Image 1 (spheres, rainbow, N blue to C red):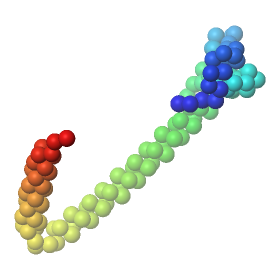
Image 2 (image 1 turned 90 degrees about the vertical axis):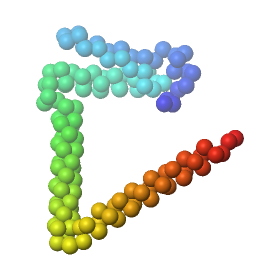
Image 3 (image 1 turned 90 degrees about the horizontal axis):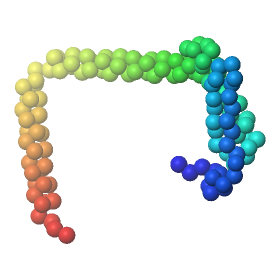
Image 4 (image 1 turned 45 degrees about the vertical axis):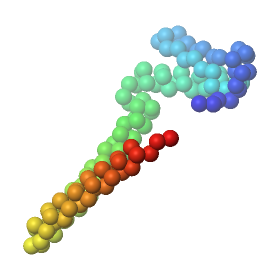
Length: 130
């Protein structure tokens, strides 16, 4: 990953180390070339870390993560429900048809065609040399 600063970020002393003395939490950052910007970023990171430490699962950061997990679970449940109903509708249509035996024969033919195509493609690959 390319970051701003390049070689200069390694030559200049712009790393910030903040320590919260009562808890002993430390934050170290060197995200930008500017010392002032790094101090601002470090304060934000320390505030977030302190919030996580004090409030635990009720911190802003953890609440946001929990909300994203709930959204993801809802999307999964909706998709599962959608595709479960789609497959049951498809099964009902297959039950109504009397041509169930023809479907298995056509599946066997398709499998044979695919297998023969794979064999032909393998022979073609083996026959070519570079």
